Image (cartoon, rainbow, N blue to C red; front, side, top):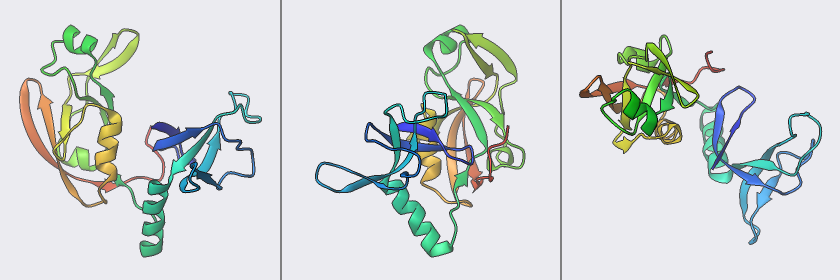
Length: 197
């Protein structure tokens, strides 16, 4: 359940952390379990910030993720990932209490990418910058509490819901705008080549 950054800047979710020896040049090999079944593809190593050599921690992309990607490549010749078009921060008990939010769990919409499905559905980003427990948040925007019927209390959960769809699919987001609960329908777009800054 680790996240690592892909070369294009996006996160790869549910990555397996391993202490199996992975060094430059042998990534791409299989990670096996004790029964000899392939459970992942070795992809990255932790270098301790120096950029040289393995410090004993490696990461493998799970085999079920690889299966999905390979199936898309075989069928379409390319991989397309669905894209909502928001960045979000998880609601903490401190921020919910300090700013009297209508919920104690959910995702504060921080930014909405121009031209995205989220923008088309009218999602609103936070406008007021605050610092709570040393963390910076934008409040005053929408709070996502569920996506496609699945409670959205963490960024990973939201990414899983989006990842289960294709570009062009529609999903319902349950949100709070102020104290008002609403449901908005978003048409998912195609993930850009690199994340917007």
